[in-house]
Amino acid sequence: MFTGIIEAEGKVIDLQKDRTNLEIFIEAPFKDELKIDQSVAHNGCCLTVVEITSDRYRVTAIDETLQKTNLGDLKIGDVVNLERCTKVGDRLDGHIVQGHVDATGECVGIENQDGSTIFTFRYSGEHITVEKGSITVNGISLTVVNSKDKEFSVAIIPYTLEHTNLRNIQIGDSVNLEFDIVGKYVAKLNQMK
Image 1 (tube, rainbow, N blue to C red):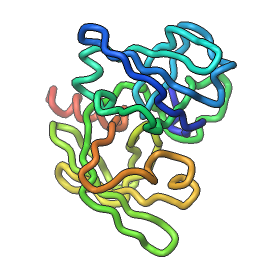
Image 2: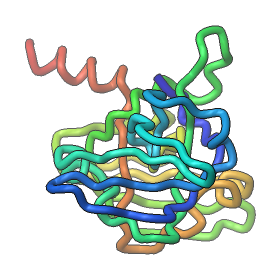
Image 3: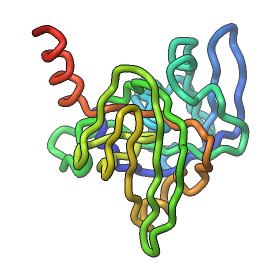
């Protein structure tokens, strides 16, 4: 489990195809603290550390992951948001994040509001957002400020913009979305009625 509070940014230093899998090599400030088999969220997608060397670690994204996330679009030099799993007993500063990306969304608007930045994203599928509810965008726990059918907006403070890869997002870019787990259960229960 994760909280959606980004711990660090990592840099993609190599990508290697292995059949339908993608081996992703990451340079990260906490690399020396990692262990093999540890879960790390990469742009909100939980991946297992499978190798650690002197300057990087490696994770594997299988075809299923590549089909449902934006990880297949990564290029060498790209910056990814990183979060290690939550320790039992720590504060839950964001919201409950599973690291299981539900869909990708497309950035359809960026508006500077003299102190904050409003990002608008469009998505497909049967997902829901609610105003003042939680959403995870590229692994970042955010609050929905405007919710429409298949579209939502979030307001980003300067600190978040500076310390995550949202600062690199442009209109038309793809982001990973994990919708609020409580909302997903409520939607499922309503379908069963």
